Length: 304
Image 1 (tube, rainbow, N blue to C red):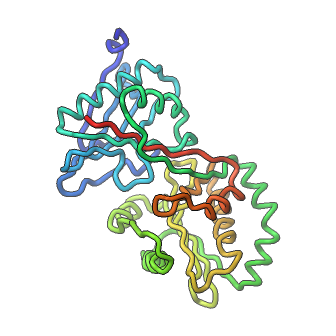
Image 2 (cartoon, helix red, strand yellow):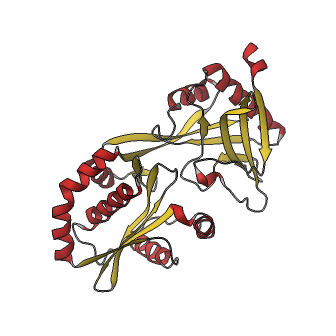
Image 3 (cartoon, helix red, strand yellow):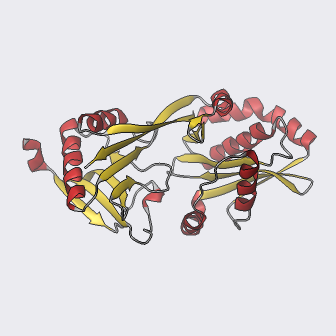
């Protein structure tokens, strides 16, 4: 393939790369190795993939993150991306990897996803997971959302005697609440707290906690994360099951949109809507009512 002559493939261990998706700044655990694979043209990156190689030979992009995936320049040819994938799989075999899993973010994060999904399929990857994400996109739409709902929101908040607390992370006591509330509902809690604490400490400007309080009792929490400079991710929402009211979930979500609008983001990611591997229809219904876009997050795996 003549196109190979115009590109260079490099792979760097313990990379120190600037990237808008800050979770690429990964600290490996014992037995892990962390890499960045890059496709270069005239020494400028046309594509990147950050991945962790675990001691059992499995490689994943990225471990314990909402997604990792390929990040490509907007104008990239199908041939050059195919070269990237081919060179990557060869290098992974040389590193002793036996499988590679790529968790590709929803389309709103990566405009080249149609090309990425197609080439991965043609290169022998198989789709092993899909999650539905709902989004609120467009700043004008957010303003309209807040304007339409603000009057009702104020009245319901006043009636429920809720106090709204919004700000940076001062301590991590809220994680105990979330873990307990989820256990009471029989839901999973798979948060790697040490990793989260490390990320918040390194990037405090990216994390925001919203809490609802009623008569000094905490009713709900949601941790919001600026995964990219132009987005806000609705992460770890949890409501105290003994204090939940009909409006509690909507109140929490309204405050998330209000925060996103104040931060000037282009879109808010309401996250996935599954429950222990199954479709959570109530959650899908709730998010659909408040979102204006939906995309899938797709995981691809290849055996090397």
